[in-house]
Length: 247
Ligand SMILES: C[C@@]1(CC(=O)O)c2cc3[nH]c(cc4nc(cc5[nH]c(cc(n2)[C@H]1CCC(=O)O)[C@@](C)(CC(=O)O)[C@@H]5CCC(=O)O)C(CC(=O)O)=C4CCC(=O)O)c(CCC(=O)O)c3CC(=O)O
Ligand SMILES: NC(=O)C1=CN([C@@H]2O[C@H](COP(=O)(O)OP(=O)(O)OC[C@H]3O[C@@H](n4cnc5c(N)ncnc54)[C@H](O)[C@@H]3O)[C@@H](O)[C@H]2O)C=CC1
Image 1 (tube, helix red, strand yellow):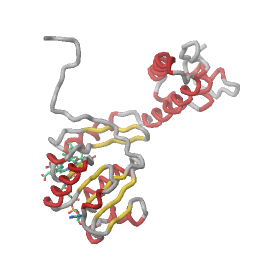
Image 2 (tube, rainbow, N blue to C red):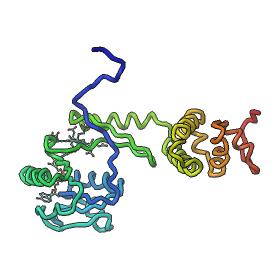
Image 3 (tube, helix red, strand yellow):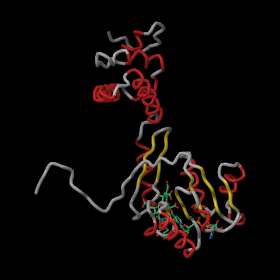
Image 4 (tube, rainbow, N blue to C red):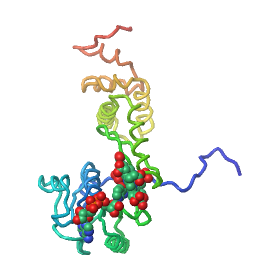
């Protein structure tokens, strides 16, 4: 039966933004792949423990250990390492050890990524572009990791240079709006107004938005209006607007 609803296209992944802040992540192995995993999870504020014999640590992982960015257990993996762990990432050059760790994680229902064995991964990593609070991930679902890297870099090249800053400023404005209009019942009005601001202001204007501008802009929330950037600046006592005056 035909419909206007989105067509289902199976065979993909569920791409999510997993919140691992202060969660315990165990990284098994200390080579190049482990070093990449460590960067990914530290960027998400996880508490990271690396299990790997000292002799196996590469320069980057050694640096993370020496700087106390991660805890280090100086030996090969043991099953007790999984106690109290929320996520496991293995990057070892020993397929038997990988499979054993995967089985244990599966039994304990701990989500795991086994770098050398895609069928034993509960989730895959992707190629990530990061600009402040903005993250863009590309996945080829195991078909071509290097191609994911190339596509990611191509996407990044097309983005406005100030997009990360614009996202950060919008985040501040949204927080302030929540304070001005905290009621659940106001949800639809709040969302509509916020969407309008994002659509009507240019990225440069969103980046230039000071806290003073935000306070002034929020004055227009109650009547449900979105003034131009120039209008907001002109209303401020020390309005620093120096562009063309469009009144
Ligand atoms: C399934 C997956 C599971 C997982 O790792 O989570 C996986 C699996 C494997 N990768 C292998 C090889 C390479 N991986 C890379 C690079 C990356 N690999 C990443 C993810 C993923 N790799 C997941 C699928 C993601 C997707 O499909 O989109 C990225 C995106 C993210 C990251 O690792 O952080 C990161 C780029 C990050 C960036 O640049 O930003 C390169 C290129 C390079 O190193 O420069 C090569 C060599 C060239 C090539 O093969 O393309 C092999 C060995 C194959 C063999 O032995 O031949 C396996 C195992 C297998 O396929 O059996
Ligand atoms: N998913 C991906 O993106 C990629 C996966 N790979 C695969 O990932 C694996 C790791 O790759 P690299 O980091 O380059 O290897 P590597 O050889 O540099 O590092 C392996 C590390 O594992 C440690 N190790 C081995 N057995 C261990 C155990 N039982 N307990 C704890 N630590 C142990 C070693 O001391 C070493 O630090 C390889 O199997 C490789 O084929 C390789 C490239 C990309």
